[in-house]
Image 1 (cartoon, rainbow, N blue to C red):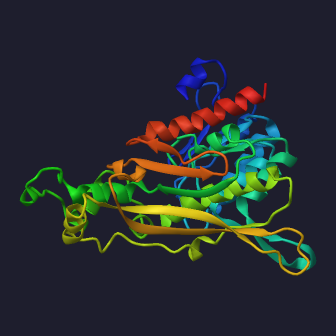
Image 2 (cartoon, rainbow, N blue to C red; image 1 turned 90 degrees about the vertical axis):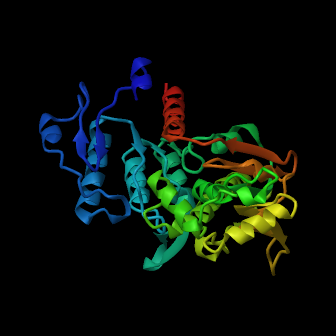
Length: 373
């Protein structure tokens, strides 16, 4: 934020967090004085466990910001329920409907589907991302999410701006840095000739160390049992599929499996013996790998065009030294794209910090500010 203000590009109207509402000097200048003074505390705005009252208050505040013109960009980086994407999806939807641009570090709104009303009082499950993008277009605002998957590494911008008309055929990567860190600590120092000098930790000790580093989800199962990797994989598939279908000269339905239908492996049962055995067999290493490949299905009945489906999974793989993912250690991550015109193309994030995530948000803000001039 200091870089933005120093550049005279933007003003920060207010900051909402679990600590309450903070109004920077000069902020909220377009809000009625009474509105600023009566802004509620948000101590119970705790991500997926947020109270109904805090959620409703936040949505009312977003509507107020849009109605008064006190802000035109909302930056969302709150914890949300990983199995539903709420309350982030609702906050983004309210912001967009209030004609506010939104920048999000949340993967939930990109990965999850939601129930949307259709005719005759019925509901149909649709991708939240498609709904949000459609709303953004209708309200002439932008919804950007560069920090949603790889800590600000521009994988979405890369695909959006440098791969026009390319068709993604497969994707493969280590998308959960927590499991990579745990496996790295379990491996210890294995490069010496003396295997007896092995210094690796047990799974429990490595998990405990990762928790102290603050990189484990509140529910550790989301990381170690592959759910987080599946969400991130699906986020990329939803995004790329939306661009592939819109840029294709022929309409083609692309099916993306629901998150709960993506097979997932766990790293819980990896032992010292497994790691020793793999390394002794050609210096192999274990990594939790998220991958997907696309398959084309034959047209059914009166369908004019073939449909496609993504075959996705999160698998504990034993990697050889020539595998691009083999180099990963610590909290590093990597994603590899194979397309019909280029590939494989690898994008690596080396031991990211909060600065990386913040820069992803910053780059989205700058893009909105630049394109809104």
